[in-house]
Structures are given as C-alpha cells and as structure tokens.
Length: 464
Image (cartoon, rainbow, N blue to C red; front, side, top):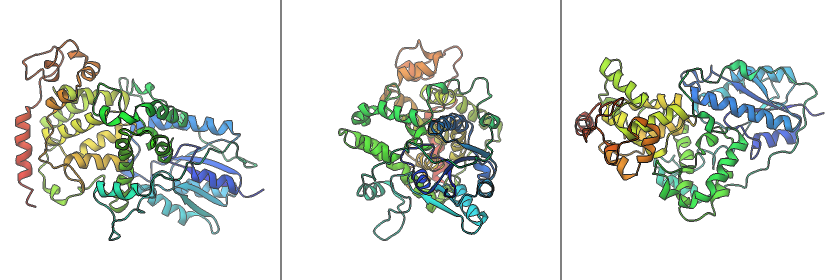
C-alpha cells in the first residue's frame, strides 16, 4: 500500500471541489486532519461566534467522512508541530492543503516546511477563491489597490474552472492516529443570553448547498432586494463561504446564467478575492490604516468612562437609533447582520461616536459567524475612509434617513420590540419625534452634533 497522505483542513471544510482532498485521494490512503490552533494566530484567535460555527461544521464534516468509510482526526495546539508529529506517527509521505492567505497561516506553512523531515512535502492547492490571490495584476504588473479595475481584470478570466465532484470513497490507512474529542474543545457558547438565534443556521456542506439552492431563485433580483433589511434579500452564504463549506467556483457556476441583477452578487463574490489580495500585499491590513494620514485622527479614548458607556450602548443595541440597535441586536442573537445595516452600524461607531474602526472590527471578529480577517478589515476601512479603496470620511451616513429610505420598519419591530407599537415615521426616530418609549433609551448623541464633531476631527488631518 502507498504511504498515507494527510489532508490538512482549515477554512475549507467540504469534500466537493476540494483540490487538496482530490490530490491526496489520487496518491494513497487519506488521513483527514483538523487542528484547532490558538497558538499561531496569537492576537487573532478565532472569535466566539466562529467557534460555534466551527463545532457544527466539523461535526458535519466528520459525518460526511464517516459515510465514506473515513474519519476526521482532531488535534489542538500548534499546527506545524502537530502535523510534523502526525507524519512521524503515520509514515505519511505528503501533506495536502488549500492555500490560505491570512498572515498567521502563511507563517504556519513556513514553520511546517521547516519541521517536516526530508522527503516529506507540503503541497498547497488553490480553490478557496475564484482565482489565486496575487495572480491578477495591473497592466504595469503591480497589485490592484482599487476594487473596480480589479473586478474588471478578474472578470476577464471568468467563469472559473468547473468544480470537482466529491470523492465517493477514499482509501483509508491501515492504522488511524489518535484523535481528540470535539466536545473537549468547548467551542459552544456559555453566555446565557447570547447566540440564542444561532440555531437558524445549518453549518456544513449540506447546509451550504441548501442555502445556495434557496438563494438561486432570488439571485436575478439581488440588487433590488439586498438593501432592504425587512426583506430576505441577502444570500446568507457568507459564513458557508468563509468556512469553505462551498467553493466560490460552485457558487459562480450555479448563478452565472441567472441574468437580471445577478452580476451585483457576483461582484460581491469577487470582493472576497479583492480583500484577500489586500492582505497578501498588506498582511497587517486588519490592524493598520491603509491611508497613513488616519494615524493622526484623534479617536476618542475608550478607556474614558463616557466613551466606554457609549461603546457598550453600541454593542448592546441601546444607542437610541433604532436601525443601529436592530442591527446590533440581530448580530448578538444570530451571529450575522444585514449587509446594509452593517454599514450603518459601522459608520455610527466610527463617525457618530468617533471610536477607532479597529474597536468595531474586533467586536465583529468575535460576534460574526462569517468573521473573515480580510473582508472584515476591507469593509471597516471602507466605511472609515482609511482604506486604500474607501468611502470618503466626510460622507457620513444619517441612520435615521437610511432607516426610512430602505424601509426598515418591519426589521426594527422584530429586533427592537420596545418600539413595536410605534407608527412610522416615529418608529425610525422616536427621540426626534418626542416619543419617549418605556425601556428604550433616548439617542446618545444627536446626528448634527456627531457630524460636526467628526468633520472637525477630520479637518485636522486631511492635509496630512
């Protein structure tokens, strides 16, 4: 029998269109492995919501492997050290994995190559993105910084290669290495009132494909529906894509012929590739301003009691701005927030409260089931104006008018039940209409006051 082949799963928890698995299965007996590595990421350990998703996604993956006569081996600790140990334990001749571009995973790949004995190779395959990050360049051969020309360049190479089918069966090793118990990792939440709506999700490859099937009929009307919080117009595929339960190539091939407004969604799919290209060229983009002039912006100090109280009000959905509060409560309950409301809530923290975008990015990192280092950073820096491709800081969203413009009434009534009986337009702005609703706070700051403060802060740096 040929030497075993280790498949190192990370954010690619699927069997279909999984190039690493296909290559390993063609070479010999397959040992599928997932390692919970909290050591390599250091300050970027997986957030609590992502850990919930991971638990259920690994459960689903293990079940799929079991149906094929295989099994999933679980280990915790340094990925490089654990994989080197597994090679010694099993006599594996190769490790197969998909490319990952977060800086800690690139560091882990470098460390693993150094730890492997002579003759054992790490084979990295593509497949988590439409095209390999770094492969699409400008006419002068440099990396793209602006999204629109990146979209045009990448789109010239579409559609991506046809997705691979999942293997029906896999050769297994003569002896399996020991595995840790998933429940021992304690990935599920312990906060009593958090994640109460997470059960609406179905993590795993089957759940991803079911969600894609649900979205298909709406894809041609995506642009008309995606900005309406009260309508189920989002694809809700983002956590499935983040954990690699479905490949972007699979999504593209299923949707590309739908016509209508489907291109708007495909552009959002390309945004994932764009964000990965950003962190490939700027690994610290999740912690550093894309525009250095923002280093001098006088953010308010969250250690100060007043600012800390306002930050807590934002986190808990008690700002007195119903559209913001509805979004933050949806996030706390379900681990997800409507895409339009994400922008409104992020803008409120950055420009109404003048709190550093990195504070908000960290909160989303911990509470989003689709928390993605590259996309999260690109999105927050777009709203802040600090990104290499971003909205202008002086374009300050007005949450109250945004709420009315995008008809968020039913959304607010669902997530802010204190306001359920208020008629419109009071529902969108109870403070402004003098409607003091028992149990609901007054606005913590007026829009005009916040806008003037933000513009004054930016005026001091815009010449930098």
